[in-house]
Each structure stands twice: as C-alpha cells, then as structure tokens.
Length: 105
Image (cartoon, rainbow, N blue to C red; front, side, top):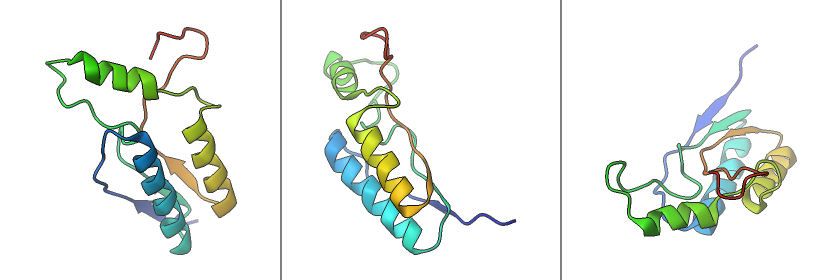
C-alpha cells in the first residue's frame, strides 16, 4: 500500500489566526491533490521563537496566550474538523497548554 504524502513550507507569522487560515488552505490543496497525509512545519501554528538563547518576555507571553489544549483548543478543533471533512491526516507543530496545569506549556 502506498500513501500519498504532502508537505508544506510556509511563511510563519506571530499571528495564530493567519497561520490557521494557511493551514486550512494547505489541507484543502493537499486533499484536492489526493494526499492522505499532510506534514506542516514545526511550531508553525503560533510561530517560532525568534531566539533560543535570548528569551524576550513578549515572545513567552505570545506562546502562553496562544497555546491550546489537545484536544479541545479552537484551532486544534478547526484543524481536526477540516482533516476529517477532507479525509486526510495532519501533522503540525504548536505550543500545547497542559489541561490540568494552566501555566505549564
């Protein structure tokens, strides 16, 4: 059995909604081309940290404020619903919030 795989390279921004819109478009495009699996970039839902050695607190707060639980987060739900609708599996990167410990990412 052969699985058709799609990958996407994207210009990730510090705007989760804008990145989500791109995700949903990529899901449609991959499904339209017969892909069964779409792999999106690491940490691409919220945006990458600009530096791993110098943590600006505004970057931390962006990650904290835009993190979601899995399952149940609004963007996670939108992605899984679109994937189910288009019959495709999705691999994507995001900042996840612990469901039981609010401050734990």
